[in-house]
Image 1: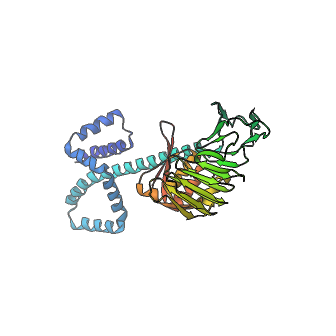
Image 2: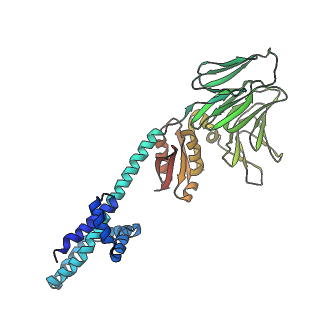
Image 3: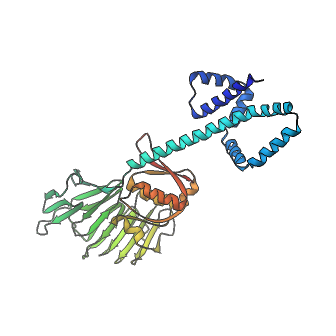
Length: 401
């Protein structure tokens, strides 16, 4: 009988090692041979079943150990020692396998969790907040990296001087110079960037991450027309000519005012928030909607009702240009999409319900990403991990806590 004990414990140890993937070639041969027996294979699969392990862990945790021990002593007294030892031994053979295997799984889960934590910490140190960076595309197609051309003229021609100073791109126009056919420039701000441009009429524009604006080097004609993709905050210089911001689905017309527009191509809406002055929103359906300060005009591309107007706290829609994130009961999906444009990551939800979890909070844009994720994790009661894909894309995975 005793000869059988080492083999059972050895199998239990091999099962534990297989879970932790530490089997050597000789041990793998022994375990594979044991698994050829159908009964053994079923036992092995049952032992390693996640639900079975969780069930056993809950069962063992719920046991009253003192009561169980007293019951065991009572049984020994009531039965013949030899008979009971045989039953106890038969039980112990299988209990040993399960105990060692469960221990192995628990050790492996701890090892995997620790490895996941280390990877997350390493990736989060690589993900840095954005900064002032942009590319200017001139009318002739020349691309100028504004992070390399600092505090100096970019170009001077036709009575127009373009200067990049203190992370602000400015156009100085000589009004006495002969007007030519306007040349168009485009300012591109990449993911993780922000930049400011002073247009030829003196209007000031803050361009957010993953955004671009196209405008003439000199405004001519009846309108001051610019084209926006992404998000920008405008302080429009008053003038006799209308200032028009054209997006994919909407035109915003003003004379002199301050407002924010969010019109990213991969979003399903255009949101215009008015700070001061008055604006007119014109959609593809030629619907005109006027906004007053503190109101947001929201156009959902898939909805039939057109522009909807809401009273809002403007801080939550304009604070990005001042270096802060403000969120008020926004869904995790919308919040992390905005944050991802700044830090440069994609987000994946392990459970679809987590997309709708609301969150309210304030965070500095120059803070480490981990600080914001920790705040969201504690408040919204979610878990997160970070990884870098084979293609070099940073990914944040949101899970239930």
